[in-house]
Image 1: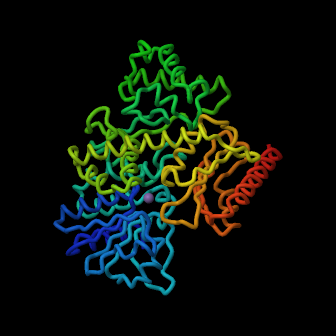
Image 2: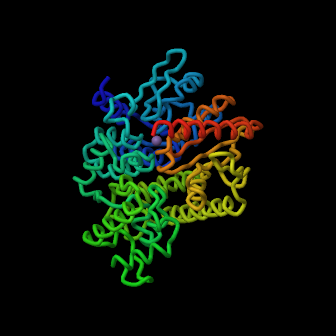
Image 3: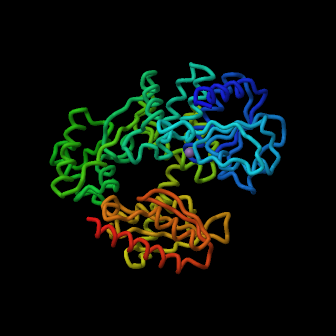
Length: 465
Ligand SMILES: [Mn+2]
């Protein structure tokens, strides 16, 4: 069926339900998806029972209520239809709204799903929050206020990362939000913290792309901003959001010159940013990427319902708790980064590696690895091994690298997937950031194999250039 038919069918089934159990993932996309559907249903008078799960797996299947409610799965479910079938969940009681690869149930039970991957290229960069928004909008055209959450979910799931902007239907949703006055799109720098952080910190924390002479060097960033007249004095720090259009342009052209003077590409320097000017100034709610980080922080520290309360409009007790989660999240990542730098990494051929054991939760290890790498040798990809909370027999490997290393032929996802498969594990991700799970005990051989594969990529990259 086409997307219009599928979305309409989902909207009708949801609106006609007597009660809904809403099973959702706990990251920013899962929390916004949950919030979009639960708010849309509340407006139709349909009661909703929330069920947040870290993953849909045999252990979490019993959390799905065994009753006659309509089970709506958001940001998960498509890949776990076999588990639903095994648990004998009636297909008449199921609607899946997802964007992960769909795997049909082995014994042929057909679950109804609206999956972003099924409707052509325009939908490939659309997260579950995008799909749930289309359903909510179909339920009631007045649900356009939920578009903002759809943008947060899409940005949180990195849908804008490669291209520097949302594309296809996800961009249409951002336009829809802007047309209804819920959002403003601004062409800005590809940095984080544009609403809450002093600009010199946003710039010096930028690691994709690396800004020569500025990335990793906050004092130099202050000097630079004073020199170009964006800061009046070194102590007169401002956020990106506080700049006038002229100042933002001046900043952009000066940073671009700095890149070009150092022979770096400016391709990844700019990105479309999604601001919510109806939220309080200098809060993480003011733009999509900071909002998404706040929700991810809630999810990663097992408080998805707090994030959902913020999405539903709470700016009191729950919001303050979410702020606390965000601060905690950041300080843990900083601590992890310091731990890596203080302990030191081991050189293994073309990569550098460290095993951090069970000191930090595996959910933040990738982010910490990326942050540590910006202060290490950026020419060598980093591989961080850690224990996995609920999986005592497995280790997680997280790898990060830089654009300039990709240009020499490196593809982390390819190397990790290949190596992990050889040891009975599995990997995934992107060329610049990837992860894998491997059985415990093989880590030494695994690292040697990854290092070999990366070396081979570099060797053939050299041959081709
Ligand atoms: Mn997602």
